Image (cartoon, rainbow, N blue to C red; front, side):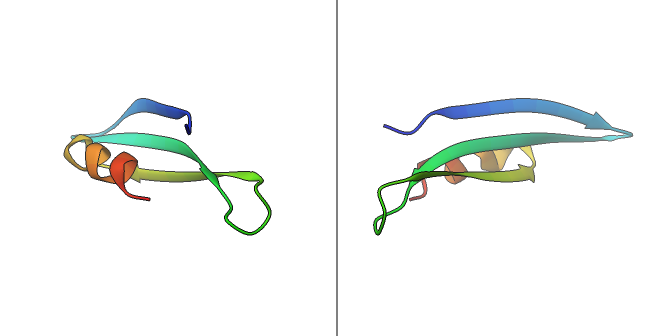
Length: 50
Protein backbone atom coordinates (compact mmCIF):
# COMPACT_ATOMS: atom_id res chain seq x y z
CA UNK A 1 0.00 0.00 0.00
CA UNK A 2 1.39 3.36 -1.00
CA UNK A 3 1.56 6.20 1.51
CA UNK A 4 -0.33 9.38 0.75
CA UNK A 5 0.29 12.95 1.88
CA UNK A 6 -1.70 16.11 1.26
CA UNK A 7 -0.74 19.70 2.16
CA UNK A 8 -2.88 22.79 1.60
CA UNK A 9 -1.25 25.84 0.02
CA UNK A 10 -2.83 29.27 -0.25
CA UNK A 11 -1.51 31.67 -2.88
CA UNK A 12 -3.38 34.91 -3.29
CA UNK A 13 -7.00 34.14 -4.11
CA UNK A 14 -6.39 30.58 -5.32
CA UNK A 15 -6.43 27.60 -2.99
CA UNK A 16 -4.05 24.87 -4.09
CA UNK A 17 -3.11 21.49 -2.68
CA UNK A 18 0.17 19.62 -3.03
CA UNK A 19 -0.38 15.86 -3.09
CA UNK A 20 2.43 13.32 -2.76
CA UNK A 21 2.09 9.57 -3.26
CA UNK A 22 4.49 6.66 -3.33
CA UNK A 23 4.32 4.49 -6.44
CA UNK A 24 5.95 1.07 -6.70
CA UNK A 25 7.90 0.45 -9.92
CA UNK A 26 6.75 -2.71 -11.70
CA UNK A 27 10.28 -3.36 -13.05
CA UNK A 28 12.49 -2.92 -9.99
CA UNK A 29 10.04 -3.00 -7.10
CA UNK A 30 11.49 0.29 -5.78
CA UNK A 31 9.22 3.09 -4.63
CA UNK A 32 9.26 6.57 -6.17
CA UNK A 33 7.44 9.72 -5.14
CA UNK A 34 5.00 11.47 -7.45
CA UNK A 35 4.15 15.07 -6.56
CA UNK A 36 1.53 17.38 -8.02
CA UNK A 37 0.01 20.76 -7.16
CA UNK A 38 -3.69 21.02 -7.95
CA UNK A 39 -7.05 22.26 -6.73
CA UNK A 40 -8.51 20.38 -3.75
CA UNK A 41 -11.30 18.92 -5.91
CA UNK A 42 -8.81 16.92 -8.01
CA UNK A 43 -6.88 15.31 -5.13
CA UNK A 44 -9.15 12.27 -4.91
CA UNK A 45 -8.69 11.49 -8.61
CA UNK A 46 -4.91 11.87 -8.33
CA UNK A 47 -4.61 9.55 -5.34
CA UNK A 48 -6.95 6.92 -6.82
CA UNK A 49 -5.14 6.86 -10.18
CA UNK A 50 -2.47 4.17 -10.58
